[in-house]
Length: 244
Image 1: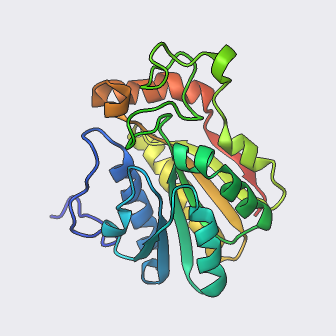
Image 2: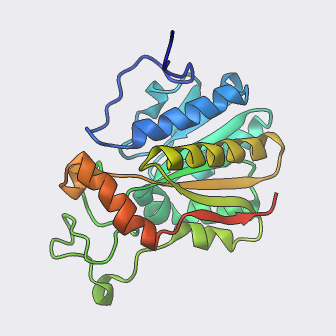
Image 3: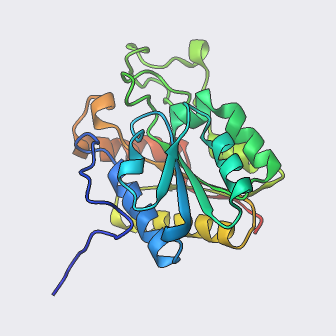
């Protein structure tokens, strides 16, 4: 009896993520959702610059790479020239909430009929563990070795709450991937975001709270505890907007 099979939405290329990283888990949820919705063969993924820069190797669908932060702008062009395709961006917090803030804000304001998967691990992972806009107060990074101080660096940005204020944004939800029940909720949110696009409902974004054991300088087990005990109280889970 087969107990578990890898989703056909994922390729056989080994993932390049660090031990304890949650990108692979999130990839799995996306792949399963695309297969279950029957749209894998007409999906186009937009890869970012960051830890998931090579996601085009991991998904069994068409994909292209955008410059850092520009994935929503590229996705807009791809969707408008291929309106029958399912287009999604996959972006980290440094990519979406810092370098690409303008692109994501205006994509939502245009009401682009795309799906955005926003992975928030509160740090720049690939480029050296620098402080990100989402880095929590007192959290130590390579550019805030004494911990993020509100007086100098401000509070962490809460992107889902910001995006929910945009009139043309249809669906905004924040989920987590730290345990099985929350993975089920995360998959349901991702699937809903894709289904919104299938039904031409407009812009949808799912923020997934993830971990970065290497950047945080903790073990994978400790990173999951940090996500649950420290990140979630600040980045509160739930639906921020559902206008669909």
